[in-house]
Image (cartoon, rainbow over all chains, first blue to last red; front, side):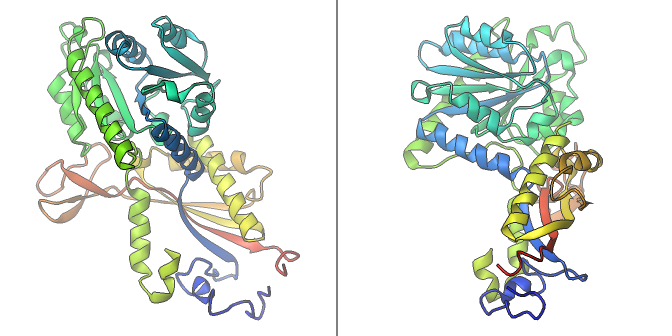
Length: 286
Length: 121
């Protein structure tokens, strides 16, 4: 190919080089390639692959995110106590170090794979994929992925799960959704935990916590539980069973579901680009 | 600090594009980042020299266009500015809005220098 006289430009590729085309040259003659991809497209690709695994094996995968110590493992222990006899549950545990959480889950008679991330502050789709090779998905109905305790980084990484749950524990304060909007916006459901402490932490108002969530333009369900007293567990289990039912429906109808991470930024820009390029020669490009 | 992993993913994407286009080096990388993406542009710029060291992108200029947070209200049929933690309609105050800008973490374009020896392939 020759880039000097333009003899490599044919009717088949001329539109790529024209203004707005994908291979438009810059003013100084360099090759400019329009990409319009998520910065995390490699992770997203792996996540889509993980989700195919889950869907093919009929597994509902739920990613639990919260600050450290918000009660993710205690919630799982209480959930296993209530549903472990009827549902086949497994857990992937993400922590920087130790097998402590996996051991707590195994003590309940449920399989747990611990991912120790070393210094990484979040799980990504590749780590989860490696963990999946250590489990038999055919023997599971419900997989919980307990993310690294962190209210910032896990929000950006799709792991292949169908649902995200963000936990907010009462001692953290009711304004956490206003302080960490990204992770609360990434939730398909928000669970307020440790509600048995409400009588002692009078500054925490359940309705104010919910108001902060709504101000993120989020209409997701907000439930309150105490894994310790058992208060609110019933509603959580009803929600969970409902979601398992929905997942079974999706599998029958051949559909899948992505969690609320980065809902439509990329799609929106692709649409804008498509509308911008509404000329016939660009059609096969978009 | 997940910006370093995001930056490593970016460099890997750019390396793929360089291979696909038989380019020799990368001149400029353009991104669009919104505050609702959870990525801090300043940290991304700091992480880039570390993530790109030894790669074909090490000389590249990373340009980040920061996006404003804007929401669309179906009730008012209008767009308005919003804050990251208050995505309510600027006119009627309703929270049932849609984000129209502000959650982007997009690789928009990559400008490359063609490699002499490969340009004839």
